[in-house]
Image 1 (cartoon, rainbow, N blue to C red):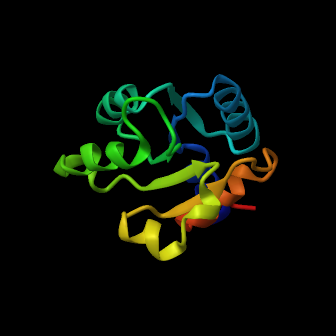
Image 2 (image 1 turned 90 degrees about the vertical axis):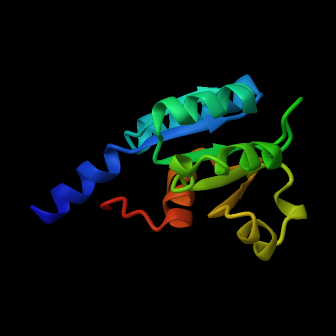
Image 3 (image 1 turned 45 degrees about the horizontal axis):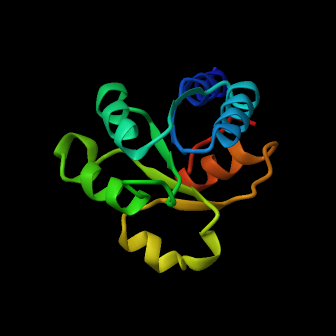
Length: 137
């Protein structure tokens, strides 16, 4: 019964992916929905992502850093000024992973960083590991 409860909890996760690359969105959404049974909500810009974060209250936000107009850092500033949004964990999903040291993203309040390119078959495990989620497997 306990294992069943953990699997239901893991499968009920709602992920907000904010990335301006359609191919990345398709791969991430497909892998997370098929391999982890998570619901993935997508946004193609930080501005759209901010609106969806407020409306959807996801369990985690996967955030690209390099986006036009509002980058990932500006998004974090806009997100975390809203008290109701401060509890939502953020994980960077970015090609700039090699430029960031753990203490840098931790001071930003980011829970983890996943480098692009990433392994689509293990992406759900990398997210779960960054957030200490039990996948039930």
